[in-house]
Image (cartoon, rainbow, N blue to C red):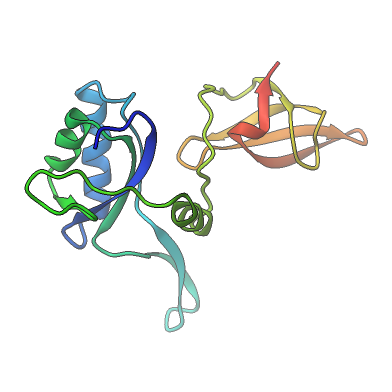
Length: 179
């Protein structure tokens, strides 16, 4: 099952090694020249409040032992991901070298939304200080200056002048375009 479109897949890992697998996979994708096949790696987490430690907020794994990867499924990308240290296999693969089934769009949309991320993706490379035009949302049609770029969540913090004051807003990469 060779695909030319990027889809999300679930990796099974050793429990407790999810962040290490994420770092290893991102590093391998870069060093092996697979950036056009392996795009994003995510460890689903949610906020947890510690009742005994005066409500201290901690991040807790939503799916311990699992990591999500957005990739174009090919023999080469499958090999790179499958042989990343800490990865024990793909979920949805029947073994014997078979390729796994991707997550449904609704499934990954729900998981990423819960994490505060998005499945929407932009090829634009935004930089702090750039001026952008806002294409959708409450500030549609206005221009603003980028003050922060969150490449992990594909979000921008943009300052928009409104009523003579700077107003900070958070936008997805695909909600803006470069001037």
